Image (tube, rainbow, N blue to C red):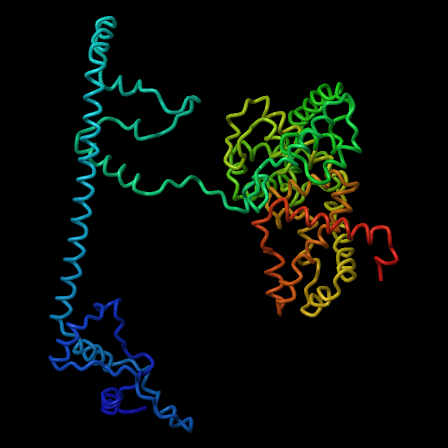
Length: 551
């Protein structure tokens, strides 16, 4: 270690930057660089540090390196001296002068802003007073007659409170017009707040692109083209008959179902409703009554010892279901989902509730809500629906979800053998259709089960926006064994769709991050249609060729 004298000589004679040395940072603790003020510093004899520090001598031995740097991190009496040396380079008068200038400029800007706001408010108040004066002159005689007829004068508070709300649906809406009348000073403060609010652009609640459920293509084409209108007419004609031809309905539905007829089409394709039109109403009433009979019979047992674990897991998973869509964060919607999932779990003890089943309710719920509303559903308040409509949506969602799960229940039984088989089949299929992608995954030791388990368990709902899932399910319900068999080919086409991005990743971590966060938030009907077409090609090539499918 060097002596104290050597330390001081070292620090004073060395211009090179040393680790731990104090460096002036302009714009942080010290005032910004000003050429005029800097000239004063030079005149005062405070020379600025050199722009480029000298290159220190390179140490050739560890002993030399130690002798150079051993005192760089020492703490002790020399710390106070270092701080004093740093302070000497800074003229206190210059600092105060610069700070005063900054404060003075800031004060002038604030004063100018206040004057602008005051003049704007005065102008608005003058305009408002002129309008009120004109209205008072026009209505003075009518109000006088009304006062005579009523027998007493109405107080300003009553007149204010009796003003009609801009909303006529009977809901309480807080607005500036509902604020209590106060002193002119309070009114001026409110006007200032209102002026500041109006000066900002109006920003309605923003729904992230991934959470939007508008049934439109990403290219921005109109919601209803001539072709789509023609397809809608075909659906309506087919559904209007006394007996719906389900085979013809499947052919039409494979390419997508118009939103207007999707609820009835899904109920027919899932087997929930009969093809005979005369029987449908009676079947609906019977099945809905049966579901709410299950509620009365089983739902109170959710807190029993042998059911409380199931209910607790459902209660935890429901808020996680599509958290970006406000519709699913409403308490009444979450209660509906809890009842649907708990009743299904009680009635299917072989599998019970498994995480991921909660996602499968959402497409049915959204589609059946569309049966009762015209506007977009993302921010729709379900409490505005009649109770009967809400009960119908709940029962229909339960039965259609049950029909879906009946075909893939082995995905959710113990050890989930259905998913294990499908993931293995996906690996074999990808090795045939794109060997380079398959070998790339093997090279970086990426197991298909690590990313494809979720694809099978949630039917790609975590990888695609909900609007794309609904379009995908149009085809799944039109395709024989769509959810259990055709889904495999959709997953294979989906994986190969990202071939370029996969081959660009050169490590395990990069591949897993990509496969678990695929960029599909901008997807729409066009992208899903291309995906389904490729999946159908794969199915046509491999489904009926087992020898070619397996190695």
